[in-house]
Image 1 (cartoon, rainbow, N blue to C red):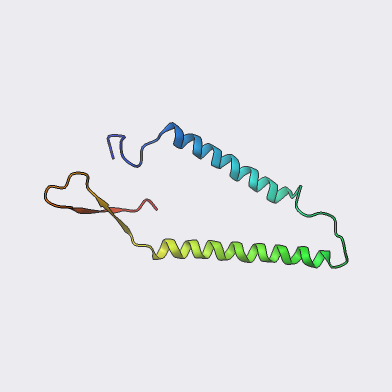
Image 2: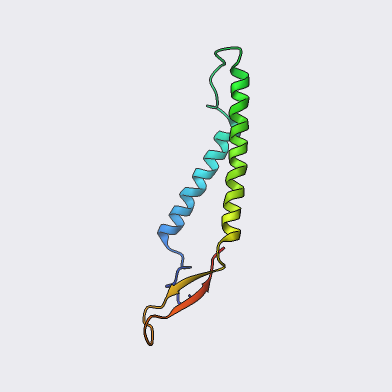
Length: 100
């Protein structure tokens, strides 16, 4: 809303949450790319194959996650019903566009 009171307004708690999420994402990316605590030393001759299997499962589940989230976004309705706070007569449902 144009008056700054609607769902798109910027609040201090929202900015703090966005900052914390950004720090979490950057820290997670660093730990994933640098791999300082990734795997311990191999305990047997089969350890390399097990580590490779773990990486394969991680990639496959990551791709499946992205595909399912994309399908959910694509297949969800384009409008979300919202109820007005003071309907003129009875309950009125207005249609508004989704944010994404």
